[in-house]
Image: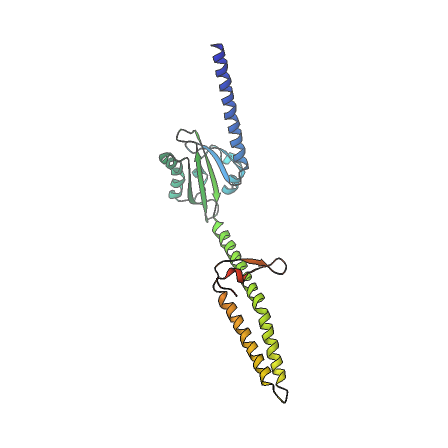
Length: 245
């Protein structure tokens, strides 16, 4: 009997230690998380929060957060619908019995412009005494995505233009040289018709080559780049088009 009780006490102590370690690790995770995060009781009362959440809410002290629900932290100017959304968020999680779900709310945090907030609610189940809520301000995300997309488009355009300049620059140069030489030959009293014809044919052929390059550049089947001068990249037209240049 004494042996059984000793084992039971040991197991209880071990379990308590595991729970305590998990608690400390969770608190550490909250403190170091790059997004806003807080630990709340079943009814949504905040028990612990991190510095990022203070920054999102434009608050300066944890005393302004702890013991309150998130909806209570919003300044005046938010519509009843927004307050209701935040208040119903946790009850929705209980009804659906979701262990993890996300919700987006537009709320006024400071000033007059609403901010887009993404809430991710995580719990261990319907009997959990606590939940974790991650809060991310995604208001500027679309603007940043648009800037990134524009930068990618500019880089792609520069790569295409660079490839075309690289490919057609030489034939254009030869065309100019041949044309100038032909013009100079006109000063001769006696014209060599064969040389004149050959020069004109060269110009026509090179012009057709440039036209083919431009036409084939419209038939991209892939976007393969190659190293050019310096650190710049240009499109490899031969490997990127469905036709051979």
